[in-house]
Each structure stands twice: as C-alpha cells, then as structure tokens.
Length: 260
Image 1 (cartoon, rainbow, N blue to C red):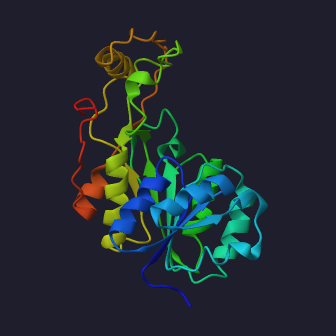
Image 2: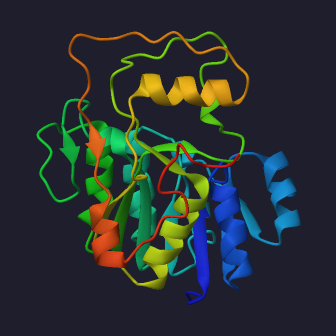
C-alpha cells in the first residue's frame, strides 16, 4: 500500500539532502536515495529512510523506495536509457505524482526571453528526458527548470577563483538561491500544481561580467578575466508564471543583494 504522507526523493546531493530535511520537519515520511553505502549510513542521522539506488544499474529492488505518493527526481544522470528504465519501475509503483527537477539549460543560449509554454525548436537530450515523465499516463508530473544554483557552499564569488575565465561576459546571468529552490518545490506540492512546467529563476539578470566581478570583489578575490563574444548569448529566463499562477514571492529576488 502506498503511504499518503510519504515523499521519495531520488538524489541526496546539494539540493536533495536539505529538501529531505525540510519535508521531515513538515512531518512527511521521507525516503531518500544515494548511490553510496557510506552515505546511506550518514543519512540515517537525518531520521529519514535511506535507500541505495543507482538508475544506471536499476533492478526491481527499487520498489520499496518507490512506496510513496510523491516522487521528486533530483539527479544529474544524463542517460536517456536509464530514465526509461526508471520510468518503467515508477509505472509499476504506487507513485501518483512526480516532480522532475530539470534545468534552464533546456533553452538554447540565443533563445531570448525563455517562457515555459513556448515550444522549443531544439529537441535536446534533457527535453527528451522531461517528456518521458510528462507524457506518462500513470501519474501526474510537474517539471521545474531551475537556473544556475547558488547558496550554501556555492558562493558565486568563488566560481572563478581558480583562475578560470568568465565565458561570454556580456551574456546575462540566470540564477536562483537554494532557499528559493526549496520554497518553490514546497509551494508546488502544497498547491497541488501538477501537470505543469515552471521556471525557477530570480528576477535580476545583470551581465556575467558585472555580476561575477562584483561577487569576487565582495570576497576580496581578484576580478576574473571576462571573455567578450561578438555574438553574445541572449537567454533570459522568465519567472512570471510562478508569480502569476502560484503567487510565488522570492526569498532572494535579486541575487546581487544576498547577504552571505
């Protein structure tokens, strides 16, 4: 039998682990996956149920992990075949809602203003993976396309501290803070906003040159070298849909003004 108050989170990395801690505080029963036995032992301290799952070598032993109503897929695997195998297992499980954590990299760099409901001319691997889940008739699926992730242990002032150059310095920044990722996921589940695609991105879009140089200076680091391209990227991720449809209010609407 499925557990109505159970959420399974596939992936216990930078976003998955704090997400599990968040839902545990909300009195959900939380299943959390990892590919490592050592990590599974560490996760027990969070008072969640850890499971060892690797979708690239999947068997039906994943079914206890999938004994839940909601599944959040939050992994970096890029193999379409692995997701196809995962889908077949989900369709045999009690899962009724899937939240697929995707990326705004699904939009081409010269797309202009990126809105969720406009068709994509390029059928990327990531878009094919999204469609696997959104087109299934066995459950309802919502996709969140997160922009670049910043927050705990990811200060943008350190991104280029190793001496790496900023590519396309005149391109626009599209970022979102970890706290807003957690809040947006919680909002979607609380409002039962299923069968949707949402962008997750902060309001501000300075140039990469202005933003990353400012962030480096804030930490006392030298400004990174910025490469200026003749044909600069035009991608700006629009977040209007989550505001209009969910009434979402950002914790950090301007990523330039975060107090770290």
